[in-house]
Image (tube, rainbow, N blue to C red):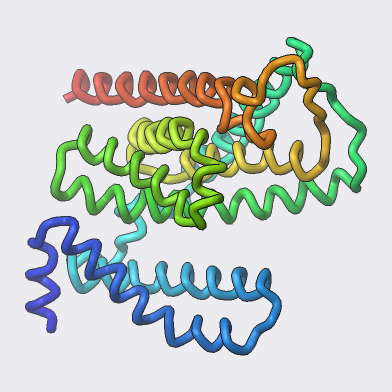
Length: 282
């Protein structure tokens, strides 16, 4: 079995990904099926099955690293480690993300496209709740996409090819939903690709650490969560939804795409500056 796993490391990336996903499903289905059959609350079912799936994902990653690549600390290879500099990157990313969201909505307010509202709920609860949700989303998606998937891609492809496959896969996999929902949220596809590019460049800028991508992703989710769930804005209707964002989601409008483009360019510049500096130091 060990020989087969060592051979697997030499197989093309699509085959390796297929084996990994198949193994994950084999671990997950025996636990998930009883939950689907025995629990009647659909929200609770979704939460429980996703938690189980991700716990098993992390468990499988460590087996994968140890047995396929002979790397017992594969999570460090992905950039996930508890260090002071990674913690600083995480906080920096959180601040950048939430400030960016405030700037996007602030500009729209300045243009008269929306009006700020008094919160109808206890705002501190929304802030704390949003922070927990956003860190969970940031951790889960960044370990999956900028950790495991990006590492697999970079083992076979150039940095540029791995970058674009990763970003497009990140966007496409956000559309695993019913056709009606896909069509409704399709306008956010370009912004999701830009976000995927941004996160890869953020990781490369920080020398492969995941702290900044997790924090930035979490900060963007956190800021939007506070404004959306807190009911802090109301659009004036002065401009079409395709400018401000369809369904009040800025990623589904011109503003969101422009904003994500600026953020992507900034991360690209920082990543390339770091790369040139490293080259000059050699």
